[in-house]
Image 1 (tube, rainbow, N blue to C red):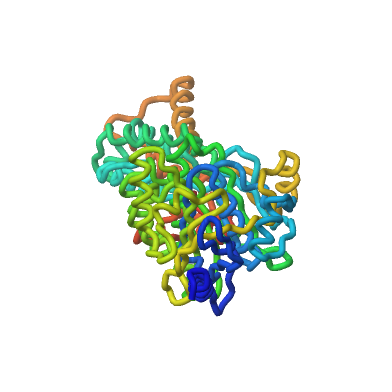
Image 2 (spheres, helix red, strand yellow):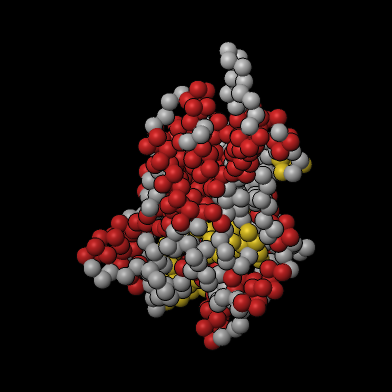
Length: 523
């Protein structure tokens, strides 16, 4: 048996599965000998996470796009984090050209340009369905990690949340939290010390500064109401195709802390709210994180540890997480070891450091009798990749040099007019794009301050007689009056903190405007 026959037999055997599988391309024995041996990935194991890596311009985005299309065709909803702003075209049909025709013929596949059901979303001022959450839903544990607080500072933050719960002060946005911190340092300091103990003023100042830094990255755009419900990520259209939810994050590259916050909260809320799935025939949801290095570059060790734990556990919910980045080195080793599917596009060796990184990257893949992995990685062309996956028995498949199939959808962005049309037709726009600004901690504290000042002015004007000597003067009970005020009685909503199960804390049911809501999405 010659090398070509041996290659075809091994690759065909390794990439043939009993259940449903998605076609991603055809195997190549070497750069000059392309075969029609199909390379498919079992749908069942895509919740085992994945990595798409490669230098700029090598085809990572198109690999992401074709995987998202295949999942949608099989009724699996997808969430894409679009950092570069070039994934919106997935909603419109592609146009055939000579390059697509050539690949179609080599792979032996049918190709027809078509769009996929899609939603455009945003956590900032970008056009799209607005994704929001309240400060209370974050809770002190997760918010403390995001703000990179030490143990003492995180402890004070937990007391602040307890204080707000006890005094019925809803924390909906950053303005609410800042007003409570200011109150603690000034007129409310004695009340706080009396009930919750001593705190360092410098600690409160540190928390305030960290909040301001997060606010400067645009966090105030997504802290608020209405909160997004993760169940809305699991929609399918009338034909049973999964929606591809594209979160437009092109303005997040200069805001890494905000992006990390969003990412961790997304995964934690999904883990908390999704039921256990076991070994299902297909995933419940697949999440693609483009430019994944932004998650890890500025993340604290605590935040990375938290993300590692969630990645390990979330696959039992039927959720797969795919990291898309330039080099496998961008992903911490503890997380990289959890990624089942690997699509490695070309890496370039311009320096000694690059060559060392390539050698390290090659060691992340199964040993192959057909390729010298560290050499092939530098020789891959555009739209070519080394692929290995997890089969239905949990074993890694043969490493295969793959000519990736072309996407069916547009390999370009939507025009502003097309985006506006797509957003206007969305069923979710009316639900989430109307901002709600209910009475919360900021309004309640300012109202109470105004009420406490007004009687003093009236007494001075009317020259009200002094109380008889010896009669005890009752100090104003600020929060006791708040509890009795009509404003407080109208707040028909239990505060929750989104203290996720993976953090070892429980989550209470949230209510908005007096009616029960389903699980919400804190990010």
